[in-house]
Image 1 (cartoon, helix red, strand yellow):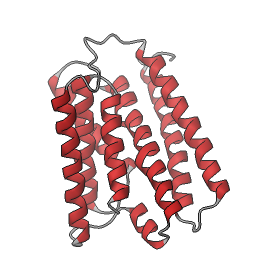
Image 2 (cartoon, helix red, strand yellow):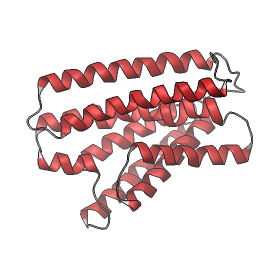
Image 3 (cartoon, helix red, strand yellow):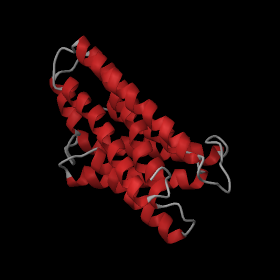
Image 4 (cartoon, helix red, strand yellow):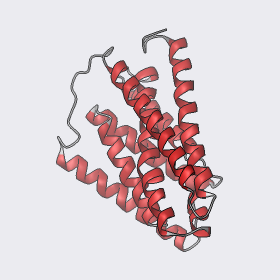
Length: 220
């Protein structure tokens, strides 16, 4: 029960991690629905986000000690991959924004709320919350813990299943009623998972997810 090799323990732990994420995401939803921003709501978000993030980092680092890795590439160890994936994320986000601007696909929920209550404080809150904090939490949940618990075997078929499972979970965490946005998020999530499998470090998908999140807010 106390190691990542316990199936029952993993289910319980993952459920706890999932609830923690829902708490942080729920507070973000609460804050963005109100205008103007209220200081106590921001303080509440800061406390919950810090608590969940520190808990994730502690648990992930502890669980990593139970596994041996063939290699761990620094996330800047392959500049071509880092630059290439960064360009791919930027190009993908620009493409999605172009489609949204011409009403080809719908806007994200937080974008709609922001356009209703547009303000400079709200913009910076979204940069921190939606652009940085939630993407980091998502990568621990959809890649770090998920691959630790279910997709650790070095088999190509398992890696592919893990990538798409991660992508689907990433899309669910960014839950949207729009099918095109749901599919787009699956593609982004699968790409982040591939970057993790390639580098064997959580920092690469976290970096890419933050780039994606910040651009998502900026291009609203």
